[in-house]
Length: 76
Image 1 (cartoon, rainbow, N blue to C red):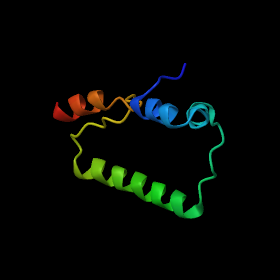
Image 2: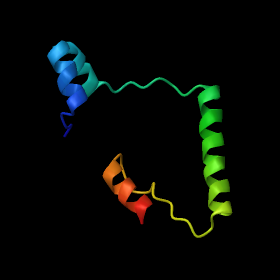
Image 3: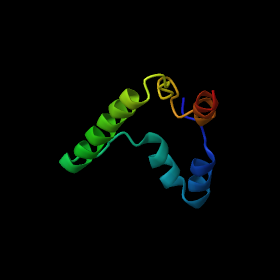
Image 4: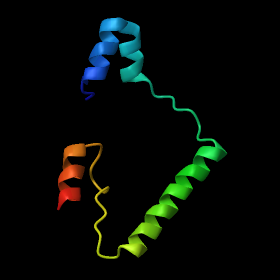
């Protein structure tokens, strides 16, 4: 089930077809080599940060875009 966010509500108010495509769009563009390199660099930086701060906690697992949980875990 797809939720109706504020952004999607505004999209629907502007154009019903845009709302439809925002909700039902399933095609994603392929990741370019440049984007993949950026993602790989970001992951490598994360690994390096975990080595520099060995007692730190990875707060990204299981968040699923729930930023309030991420904030709470970060504050802990």
